[in-house]
Image (tube, rainbow over all chains, first blue to last red; front, side, top):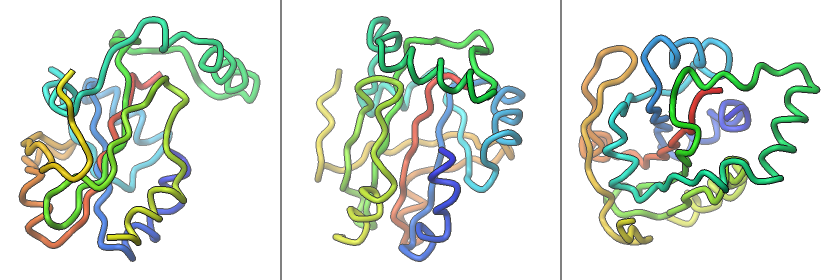
Length: 130
Length: 44
């Protein structure tokens, strides 16, 4: 997310609105925005209906695999605030999707595990191709 | 899991923003925008 925030101008240049969707509560999302990124529009999907519509899965094991544990260990060692789920579902996976001006999906990227996100360069490349 | 695929029409949705505004995907596209949707995990 930090990377997306740093590249917000690159998305603007490509006529692209970045929309973040969260199933967190409003106070938790507002706190997260203050600490992470307040440049993008954030939409709330408490019931995760849109997560389901976009085929995003839940996985106990993939949410706790070695790569993920390592990521959180490193974040903790760097002094980042981690571990507070605000009571939300730890198993829900995220993902990234690009919708073109014609309304069709140009990128479909459901995360395999919590550390799996497409690099910003790849997102920009997809936008440049359409 | 629904089989969502590249090049298919993106499922439309209407959600409320943290500012209390109702936002529909369709309307964002009508404004001649591409849209990057970033679905978060939990916020911890």
